[in-house]
Amino acid sequence: MPKSGTGRKSIHKEEHRRFLALLVEVRLGAKFTQVELARALGFSQPYISHVEAGDVRLDPVQLYFWLKACGVGYAAFMGAVEKAFDDVDRTRGAVGEKKSLTGKLPKAKKLL
Image 1 (cartoon, rainbow, N blue to C red):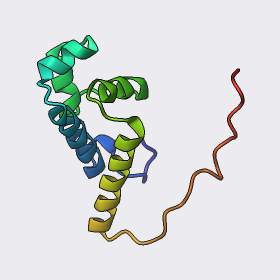
Image 2: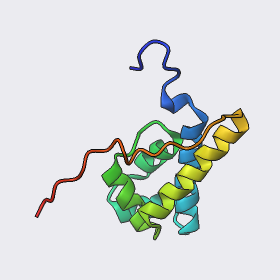
Image 3: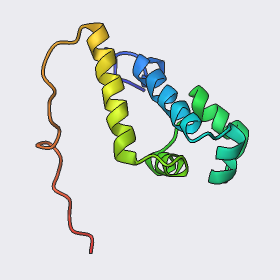
Image 4: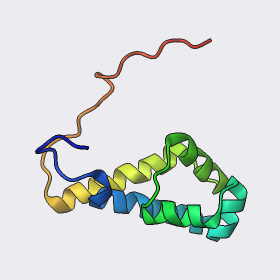
């Protein structure tokens, strides 16, 4: 639950609606029905419907496999998400430069 004063939950924001619209666009671009995508992912059609309606959220791994099944790269999709979110900011009249998070992220440790 967000702290007092931090605004609405993300599921009620325009960015969330844009994200969901992109998920549907990806599926339709692959010429999949919800049933076909569900089969490809090993889910039920109602699950796909619930995700696209915003009733259920995908974790990053599920999103990866959704995109892979539809033939869309994760980075390309996230680029489209960023553009959609920037468009929302522009319509709100947001002012300011993009701030890079790379300086704030901890360095990744070598896993192998």
